Image (cartoon, rainbow, N blue to C red):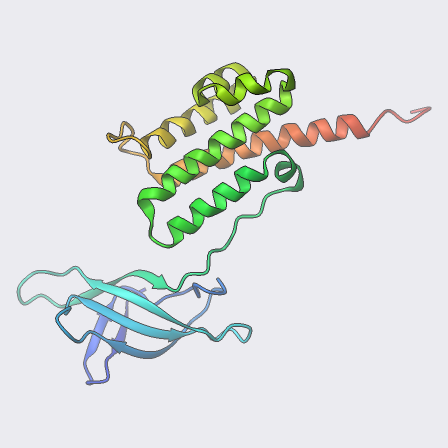
Length: 227
């Protein structure tokens, strides 16, 4: 919600909102404002130092605001753009998935780290690579005698040839389309973005995990005698 920041000079600055999450411990907090400045030649920028009130953290971090009100005589209004430093909150994956494709988990979290550090032009390529490792590692598990063929095939051909569940195949196809947009010069899917790509990857991941869990229980459980 809209808030204000008072500079040392006594000037009150209007901002769209104060940070509500510490970028280091990732707790929802109401941080303590320690200092703010908009001096120098960058009058369209506001930088504020906050301290996390979480007793297990209490670290300082910066909030960067940008003035987007350019109308002559209009009230200056600053919008929160990003926080720094940013400790990346890694995505956790289940044991079955980690056993299947540790590379997927590693690549996915590296892409997430790039995105968290505002490296949006390379994060999408990382998510695309993570998708390919997940799909190919899953396909190899399902058809181990075709491992070398799967490794050399295009992602599209692996999805079409080795993902048998119709919904999983469709979601993987959609994810591949958006992933290709992240590495090609022209985008074909202008209404979708990297968040849609991540959502689709998670849908594929969920389908893979479901298959792995079903295979686990089929292999470890049998009908009890007399049942």
